Image 1 (cartoon, each protein chain N blue to C red):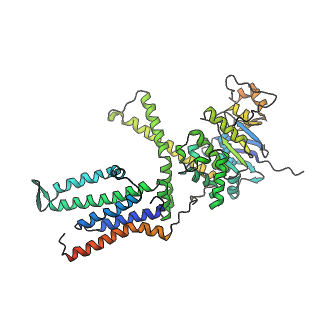
Image 2 (image 1 turned 180 degrees about the horizontal axis):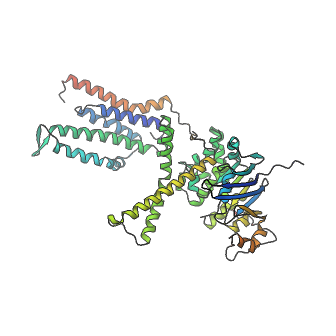
Image 3 (image 1 turned 135 degrees about the vertical axis):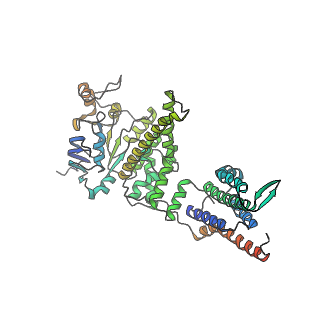
Length: 258
Length: 245
């Protein structure tokens, strides 16, 4: 039996901030290649802290993180950061270069790509998020939804194996939210999506994890987790008014493009 | 002119400024003739005169200073329209006005034909320390973001009935400025994390080929070159005429 290693494997991960605040108390999780998983949890549950460990920005106080079998260590950071693409919540944090082209090129250029190959990467990444025509514009002239999509492209340009998104639907209007969902659904990478937006998790992810109090408190099919009102309430999660999860068959909306 | 690599233009403007500043103020016609190459640059770059004039407002403080000098200057006096002005002061005033105007026009033409971030890429090609270039680049990128935050804070203050009217309101403004500083600092930290996440190791990758051909350098050199030639001719002719300008 030679199953491929999980895209992400986190074992007994614990972390305390330098000021002594313990954020993670032993997180265990594994995500298989190609899975789309939602990471749910109330504010202060340690979601961002966990995400920061996945590409080695924070190093584990205890426990281990592996990306497709490669442990996160100082000597593997370069490869880890190529494999794990982090999309931050505020696109203004992510887009720091003067033009969209320079920004999308930043990651692959750090990997050593130059010239025509780099240009092709940039164009392909922007094409995948439908932003090819914005290539020469400065990021601050784009709408918020467009900036979020370019932020996804900056990470896609590094051709990561795992895409980690922090609150991808926050501050998006309904159309931009739907457009982003269509883009994410069309990607052939492993996705870990940190979110409070439970319907969005339902729409995009078959599996959901609840991180609460620094440990994984639940792990299962998104439909079942969202149907368990008592479980949600215990972890300060709530479905929006009027939303009922289709518990048996996961809600899959056909593409509405065109 | 728009297509010339930025480092060529930067160096050309700097060299032009050096030639202008090094010209003796008594060479009135030479200083006037320096306007010609600038006019040629403006014409080839299709920069309208109105555009240049509007942006020359930045020179205003120098003009104000220059106007005052002849009145407060010491030494020999000369009667101009019934007002006794200092001769030395008039020369100093002319010196400041002429040279500042030439320098400002050259800088405005540079700015009109070069995108701000290209200017910085050019500066990096000219071996300006990379850290300074990066700082300037982030300033350029985040100026709007921070101005937007400041505006939202002002609207939030005013929505709750605050109007800055006199000095007693300064503490409120100061606290807002402090909050803005901390927010910007925190944003800086988040941007740094985003950069690390995409493989940043301390230096910005150079992705654009900005190398300039000899021909482009020659085109750029023609601005300070022409100025230098004008100075040489003017200086020689002036000497032949015994300095009787």
